[in-house]
Amino acid sequence: MGFGGIGIWQLIIILVIVVMLFGTKKLRNLGSDLGGALKGFKTAMKDEDGKDIDSDDDVTVKKVGDSNAMKSEKAEDKD
Image 1 (cartoon, rainbow, N blue to C red):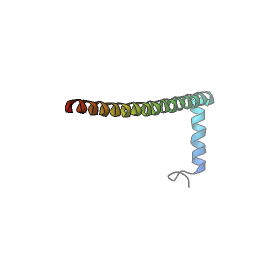
Image 2: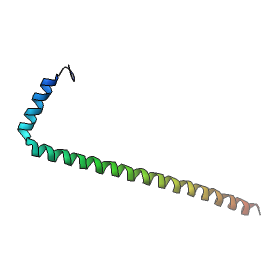
Image 3: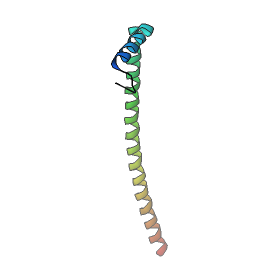
Image 4: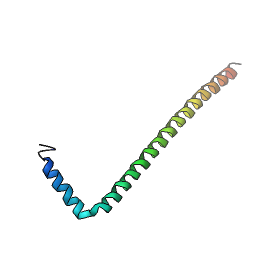
């Protein structure tokens, strides 16, 4: 038994029917289009991760800068 009670022979028959309906050229084009879409998605995810890391660093720098500004304002108020 294979997937959910479907044996290897049933999978082969389904594959043959799909090839007969769509043809090998359409299936090959579909596979290359799907691969290109996945590659583009992975690239976009890497770009987003890089932007998130950069923006987190900027926020940290701003917070440190703001806290230093607050300290200098408090020091001026005391004088």
